Length: 72
Image (cartoon, rainbow, N blue to C red; front, side, top):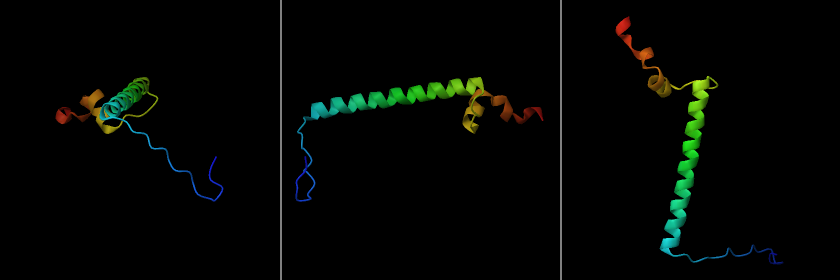
């Protein structure tokens, strides 16, 4: 596998074109966006069911009447 003299093996260099890189980058970005959307959807479900507390922004978006001081 490695060299017997204690040296680590050289990393393999692979040449790719700009088009290949941009295709890979688009795929990775799409995967990241899909993962973030799934996390956001799960968070909304958890908030709706009461499993997790809301942060201030979420509270303001879901229950803005809490911040309405006109009634006092």
